[in-house]
Length: 193
Image (cartoon, rainbow, N blue to C red):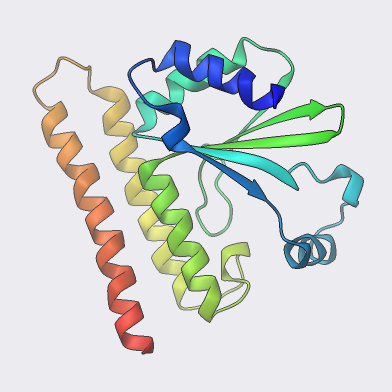
């Protein structure tokens, strides 16, 4: 598809050492999700920008910023930066919306930590439906706190130059966050068995 190719080209130009195809996931909203969104929000089906799209997971926020800068040159994309204004749950990512002739196409660009957080949110939503959209639950403070900590680590990533020896410590912080999210999910899975 031409839309994916535009982002692929920007990605390859911005992050040439990474493998785009391994980081790309196509996503199509399920009918149930579309209906739920139409009920939950005051939008029309023709205005929904995330019915069809794809997700790119990059290593860290530095790669995310690099890709964003590269794509932003193409004015046919509208950038929605949900890192600066996260949802009520703490969801953070970049969304790029392209007006394709067949309708809008959305590309989510997440860091590994943002992606694992989103996966955890989906996991919580299986047990407490609506939590990923901000419905009050026991999971909401956990999600918000994790999102805040991820933001803190990502700010350190942006502040630490690539040749700074502290970058190893910052990478360890990211690894620690990813491990903590994995461990939390395992503990919950054990608890609900």
